Image (cartoon, rainbow, N blue to C red; front, side, top):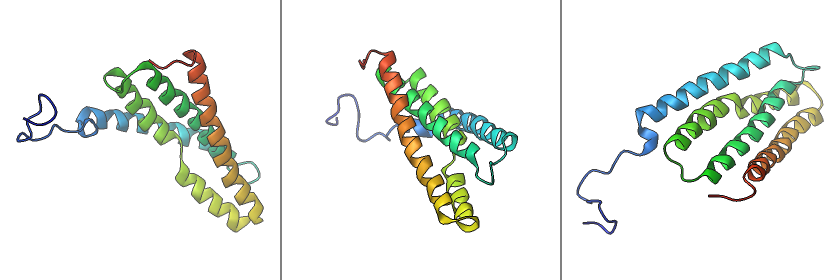
Length: 151
């Protein structure tokens, strides 16, 4: 026997949870919905004076939602069962597909090439600063909902 009770070191190790087909399917489904939502919003709301503010808003909103979701799940207990499925579907999948730092990079490069460099730098820095603040706000909101106590 191994040092861990009940696990035989001679047997193949169990498949990690992230290799399970059901986990992959949850991330895929959430990612399809999140990416579709982002694309729909970016097509429906055009850039303002050539600045893609919709992508900035999507990234900031996604950062808030991810902070809220992950802190809320953490405060409800261990990451397994329904909490893990929700994290994979909504967090990794939907919010991972909804937010887009690759578009942030491409949009920043476009703004740096087409406009005075201050516009591109302000766009990139603003997204990062507002995203960090939004994540903190999401974490604080989840903490407030549980009275600041984790289970």
